[in-house]
Image (tube, rainbow, N blue to C red; front, side, top):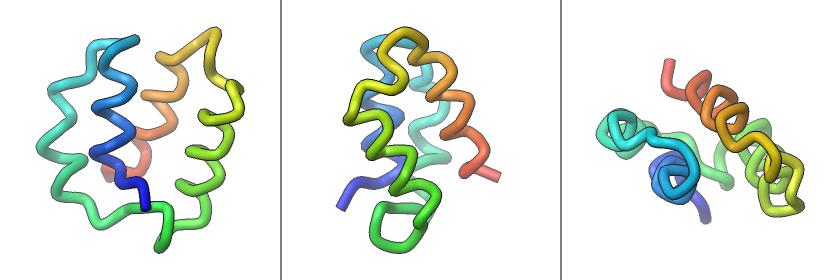
Length: 65
C-alpha cells in the first residue's frame, strides 16, 4: 500500500514539496482506498510523469483538499 505521504516524499527528490509532508501524512488517501490515487501512482510507476514531476505534484495536491 502506498500513501499520499509516500508519494510526496518520493517526488521531493525531483521537485521541492516537503511543505506538503504533514498534510499528506494526515490524509487517509492510499492505493487501497482511493481508485483515482491508485491509477495516478500506477501512471507514475510506468514513467508517465518522468518528464514533468511537477505535474505529478500538482495532481497529488488535489487529494489534499
